[in-house]
Length: 145
Image (cartoon, rainbow, N blue to C red; front, side, top):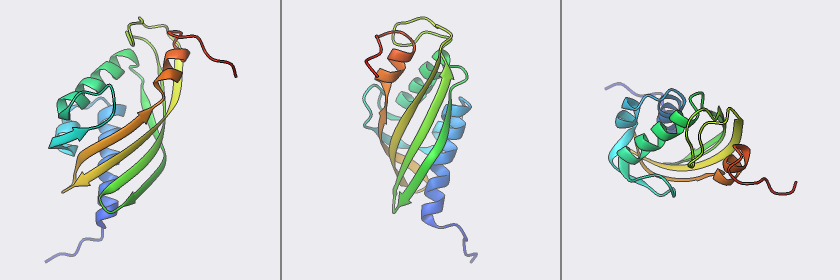
């Protein structure tokens, strides 16, 4: 019997990294089937249920921002839970929040908490600064600084 040098925590982090790099950064929807459990539960507002909800969210995002990219800033894991802080950037080239592409650059911070079971993402809670994005693309006026 071979002994693995990769801890469960490291494996969970690798699963999260793969899902984000392949799914969101590359738009590879097949990676969602490989990294998300068939009974995946989504808790973030605005994303539909299950794998199909995640895939739909990626398609909408990558249509609006074809160069969308998430960069890992922090990643922490304990047990079956993984917390990530990501910075996102992209160019608004397609419809988003009822607004056609503007050519404007966006940047935002995303916080995600994921539960990993048997090497697949089982549950997600997320916070994305959608108000900031709406302000950056001109959908709503920016507040005072």
